[in-house]
Image 1: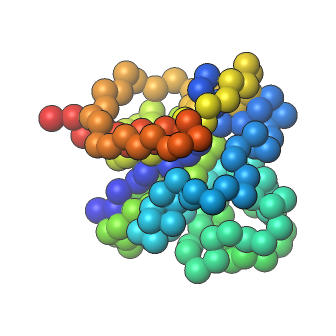
Image 2 (image 1 turned 90 degrees about the vertical axis):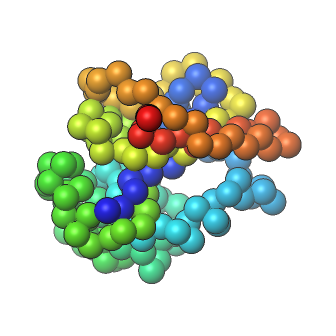
Length: 174
């Protein structure tokens, strides 16, 4: 069974993007990779929503070469230059399907709508939330939609010299 991990950066006030959907407030070109290389090495596949996919395309070079990427969308594009798989399935059905394929980490990249859908049916196993010391005031929240109260167990915290803090939680509370 894979571990579905929501690995994401958020502002101190809980936004993953600014009001226009931009992420230029995130640290850029830093010498510290905040554990990304270690995390990414253990990722078998990625899952993201269509808006996140479109935003990643704007970055230029596809950053996930060599890893299968699933994009949830009701409107797949006509072209598919990076060989991603476009998914129209219910998140629970999708999770059962990937459970038969992967046994490592499936990275839930985002965004808020998809993360909310996964969380609402209990499909996120771990949360790796990188809190950026920035207050946006408004924007795209960490989660959207209704979901039940979710109690988490702390696995690890890491503080970085620039003030960023990584919070790693498991949804499996004993």
